[in-house]
Image (cartoon, rainbow, N blue to C red; front, side):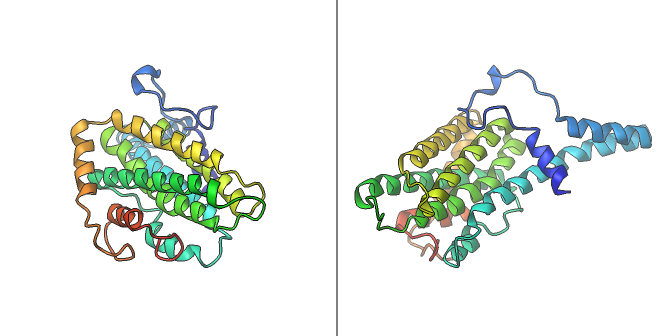
Length: 265
């Protein structure tokens, strides 16, 4: 089942792992992934026309759920071997990674929370260039990785597929964003292991992720984007960041309060 799921996700990827977002209007029409066509063909051969039609219509949402689940599994990987300190942050922000945020307005609000979280990690990386010098790097390098895993990739895995479902966001642009985040996490994981400490590379990839998200939002309905923005801006920042609440508000409060990742998120 895992091999089938990963095959479905792989069929979405373009040759370049990291590319800037292009508008849907400039892209040629893409066919439904071949794996779905093969499943539909088998359904037609083994059942009546009505049964085949029903099977084909159910394949698409199953594929979308498989995509969300695969993305969630992929972004959970960087949390492995980070030690107990990563677990509270994972519990706060990456709970129910395999459960998409189905409310489109909330999904958009979460994306705005992710954008603020990206800026927070970028600022930390810039600060470390002056305050965390080689060769000892006297700072907690795990913070950038933990924040990216719990406040960027986890929430994106739950929200971006919903934007494709509800608003027609380009699924290939979604995949580009996820791939860019994964590349960033790999760099930050190397930093954390002090294999090769590089503050510029992750910051540049986070900038690419942020730009790609902005381009994706620009392709959506302005009214829908505005509704998501208003929902995010309505979060009460006076509430402690570790308190229960909607994901977008937990993200907003964590960034606003300067909360560390691994303690209270």
